[in-house]
Image 1 (cartoon, rainbow, N blue to C red):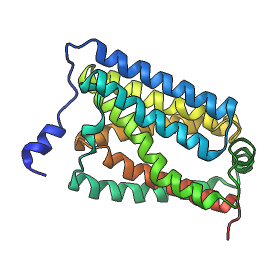
Image 2 (image 1 turned 30 degrees about the horizontal axis):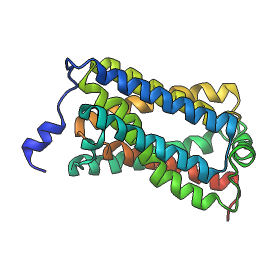
Image 3 (image 1 turned 60 degrees about the vertical axis):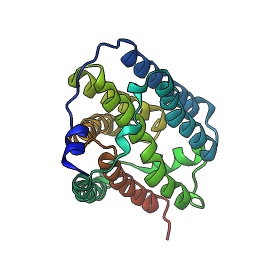
Image 4 (image 1 turned 135 degrees about the vertical axis):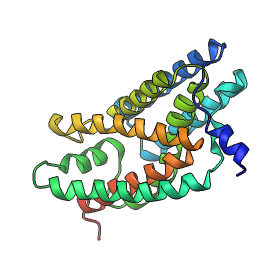
Length: 240
């Protein structure tokens, strides 16, 4: 990528005069999170159906917003930054090691058995289909979330509001979205630090994407985290 393009996609968040842009992004993000919350916590369909609904929402809604207002589009942040990608690969490996190490350090202290029970009863994820689900979560699901929460709810939102507001909104939305998914997974003692970690992770992902002007940076780190979580899933499901 040429230097001019790098500078273009590394621009700081700026505010524009269009008052409808941020409202469109915020309403759309909240609506998608509410629908997915209902799907995860109330309707509880099979994993394939849930994934299809999520893909339609997380790709379709930004596309509709782009038609209404092109400045709300997150798709301009799909251009890779080679230097950013190499750094993100290293960070993804570090996150993988940190999460896996934390699990081995804490598994004698906290009970993680609720994770597999919740996955089996609420989502239909079992030992037999876990490999397929794990691959989807690591590669596809992580991309959808980065496109939506970083490309749409942060980088696109940054075109209209202050950086601080965009950071807070995107990180909070990312964490709150996961509440319905993780109901029953952990005890409150574990759940609270997990939520704090999600908010912190959202802030870090936002920062990295802002610097590199691309969601590929956070996607690679997100994949590292998901690979670690799925490795833990292999252990919990006792897959050999």
